[in-house]
Amino acid sequence: MNGSQSSRKRQRGNILIATTLALPVFIAPLVGMGIDATLCYIVQTELSAAVDGAALGAGRLLSTNANPTDIATEYLHANFRVGQAGFWGAYNLTPTINVQTGTTKTVTVTASVTIPLIFMRLIGQTTRAVAATATATRRDARMVFVIDRSGSMNTSDGHSSTVIADLVQYAQAFTQQFTESYDELGLVVFGSSAVVGYPTTPWPASLSPTGSGGPDGNFMSGSSTDMVHQIAAITAGGGTGMGEGLALAYIELQKAHMRDLIATGADTKYNAIVLFTDGVPSSVATYLNKNGSSVIKTTVGCTYQQDDLAVDHPMYGAVVQASSHSGAPPYSAAEGFYQLASLYSTDSSAFWMNHPQDDLNISPPSVPGNTGGCSSFGWSALGNLSAIPSADKFGYNLGPNTATGVNGYRLSNIVGDSYATSMYNGTEWNTSSATSAYQWGLASWDEVDNTAEAIRADANYPNRAGDTAGNMKIAIYTVGYSGNGGTDNGLLRKIANVNGCNVNGNNCYNDNELAGLYVEASDPTQLANAFVTIASAILRLAH
Image (cartoon, rainbow, N blue to C red; front, top):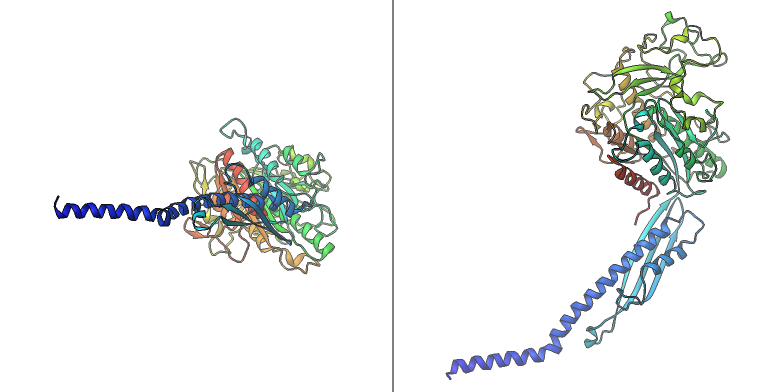
């Protein structure tokens, strides 16, 4: 054996001896540290999940009489099971729960556990403590649900039902996400015209602190006319009077807002409107003979040329267009002028849930007094008008809303329709074209856009006597069902004032107003998920 071979053997022997000596001193602790660290990571992951569940579980009940500390503790112990398999012997589960109240309520859950170590005992470490924290928030809400029940809602959802049947189911589940007595809910439905569906009071009701109506906390009382039952009674038919639907929702919010100010001196609710639609606006709530700006031709011989509320009812009504999506723009004809459902003050709103086309079946003007030549207002050519009114029944402009520097209808972007991608064909709105279905279509779009702008800016604030609380901040959330002939996601994004809103390269976000949320759904599953998303956003159920 030569010297080099002997040297190599001695080296191998030295390495073996060194490795043997290092095993208990260095290698075993390193391996053990890795194993124990993995166990600690697994336990902390389980603890984090349990803490998240405890925070959200308690957060959902923050606006109830339930004790959030007790609820969070129960959730925590149910989800982190000390002494059971999968929790690696963790013990000493110690929760700390902090609850803050106010308009936005917060529950913070922090928990720690002790984990027995296995290999690290070799170097004197027998246990390790790990902790996790989660926070959930929940705010009391006042919300008006504005539901499209136009004729297109009767079509198939592509599966085994109709869109209206699916909507009723999901809308009821959405309503049940809110808490009676703490949250306040209201309902507006619209076909060719709109009506308040809940609370069920004769309409119109005055906008005053003592007036009837306005969202309330009894929406799941179990009565035959509570909000859940009213939603169940909705049937579809008629046009798409979206602008009037939003306007009535705004009035309802103001009623409850003023009611709170009178009662407590403060409105602590988060005010919101949730709009669902499967189409595009096709109806304008109009005021044809407003004193000083009547658009009824003088040759008609109608005694309603000038309104005089002491003698006669004014010519309120809806101009409804056929919104057949057979090309751009999506308006094919004007159908006529019809009495508004919301003017039937002797009828409970419960009647209108399952009589959606009665507003179209009544030939206008159908109002008391001497109608004179007004009996001809059931026309389709609209030839008895000298122009399209410049504003709707509520005073909202029928011309383009330029609050963000871009004419509103130029942002139109119809999705879910193979024929039309925009309602705007390059021709601007013109009041002189009273017989143009296209111009009435632009007016319908602008009525919605301007009404939403007025709501977000609380434009009626100066008219609310005794409102010393400043502008009522209102957010609008929109759900567009694009699986049923097409809806305008450009319009719905603008209505919701989505942060970062950009349609067709144009910015439509107004940073001076509350941002809402737009969710598009193309099938029943997406529609169900959309309402879950909206409910969480309004209640701010998050962690």
